[in-house]
Image (cartoon, rainbow, N blue to C red):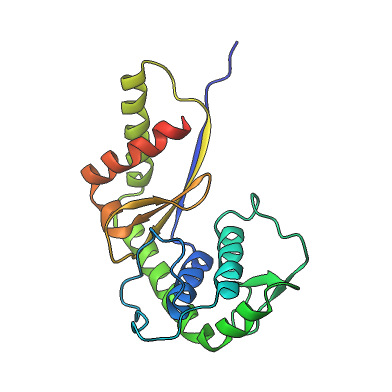
Length: 201
């Protein structure tokens, strides 16, 4: 007897992810190039000093470890960075420039990330409990009708973030980021998440 396919979808507005993006914006890091800026957070002035290639490379490594820690383990031990509670851990060696650059932004990044996470949690609570599940279940059912087969087992992480532009972006092998406004628009979100599910299922 064949096992029924399983799908696991985790949705969040992760505080560590929000902290990483707030630091990206504060430092003027442009990578990943397709990701928009966060709303309600100052964008660096055009004449501000560019982030060095070293800081950008170190931030990208930190971003990968933050978004998908199991897929991107550090080759060296990690150390917590002062001022960030347990939310930012960087490699003990090789991330010194980034650690120094982010230190002055700890309080503002944490405050922003926690407020954005709280808004996400209250928006989920204000809707009826099954809405999140139904959105994905309907997209999977539509995919199965289109391709004429059951969806394969898959795993997907969805980060619901307050980006300044509406859309959905791959930020890891099994992780997408979606604008909070798009996530709340049931019809538009259904259309946006279906190709993502199509790639995995």
